[in-house]
Length: 113
Length: 117
Image (cartoon, rainbow over all chains, first blue to last red; front, side, top):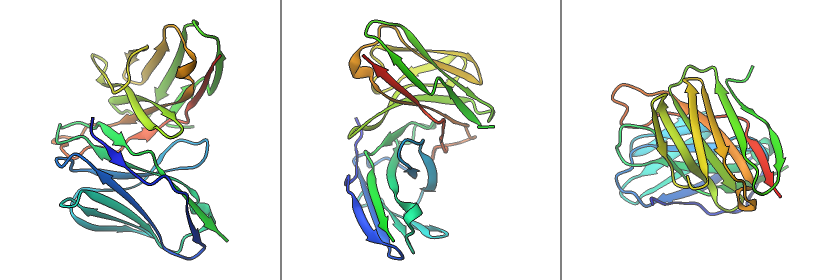
């Protein structure tokens, strides 16, 4: 079973700071990586995906992928209290031609006003 | 209206009972998934289906069965519920892409909270 690991947190940051969330994965063949946000009692919603090494930016969010070191991270700039949620990292299992995701257990982020 | 709906949203049942959780989608996606989420264990895949005639077991299929009645409907059954099946259950959908080696985005339903006594 492929593994995806995240620190469960909570990660506490003050409003306006940068929150850095990290994820490591075991399958070196994985090629697509996803970050989902999940508010308490709600369903996961996609924030970003990244397919290639380097950074991908979308508004206040930046995903970073380092395939050599097998980690992917999510940076949230200018953190807001509304960003307080659990962030799930998901990795596609190998290059199988279809979508089968392995999820990490999530990192809980708390942004204080 | 939500693109992915799940019924019921909450369910309490007793050990040994058979129950069915239903998922419907209006997104026109061909692929559907059932997950369960437990505190500290994250989301785990139970079953997945790439079209009406293709159903596959996931990581934790024991004790569960599924039915893909139509492209838009995917049901999960617990034949004889047991307390350790108490969890939050999510249905998800995605659409295949030509040459989709990099995977597709999955869209989740609102979840069904199940309690087995």
